[in-house]
Amino acid sequence: MANNGKSNDILSLAMKDFSPDQQKRALEFAMKLGIKPDDEFWLIFIAVGGLQALIFDLQKLVSEAPDQWQELFFSFQGDLCEWGDQNLQIINGLVLKAQNEDALAKSLQQLVVALSNLTQYSQQLTSELNQLAREYHRSSLEANNSYKNLSDQIQQQSDRISQKLSSMNPKSNGNTTGTGWGMFFTLIIGVGLVFCNWRLTEQSMDTNKRVSWILQRVIKAECASGRKPKYSPECKQF
Image 1 (cartoon, one colour):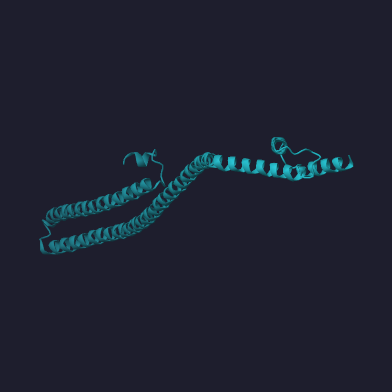
Image 2 (cartoon, rainbow, N blue to C red):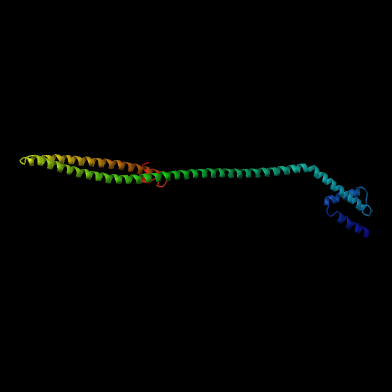
């Protein structure tokens, strides 16, 4: 009995990692061969039966493994394809973002170049306007001086001619002749003054036209660059 208890302990220890089904088949293997628990070869046949059960299970696992592996592969392939699609979408998004950023950078660069050119153009127009204003001021001074000098010269010439005529004519008709010549030269002076005034007016109008044209160009450039709002009265005319 002591040996039987010891054998049971060894049997339990040997088959502790077996599944219940494997333990059952190991016992059935020994029983089919007519081996009893009190037989000295009992443990050996139990071990052989357990080994046979393990081999059977392994063969079954090997025979079924390809289908399981295929299912596992298909499952993994589906996950991999989904992961690849997600990554492809992310990559396409990054590419599109990079393209948009590149297009934006090019547009900003073109805008900077356009603003730089517009600034240079505005500076050129401003310089021309300042130069034209200085020329207009100088022309006005010259015209006024010329007008004054011409008026003084005509008056002096008229006085000299009147003096000569008065000295050449008899005293009896000096007053009448002097008065006639005085009226004649007064008329000449008036015509000269009118002509000078007309020339001065023409120069002033021409200068004003040039100034107005340059101002229009400056305003148009400021409206195009956004320095002036498009809804402002100055920009509505363009």
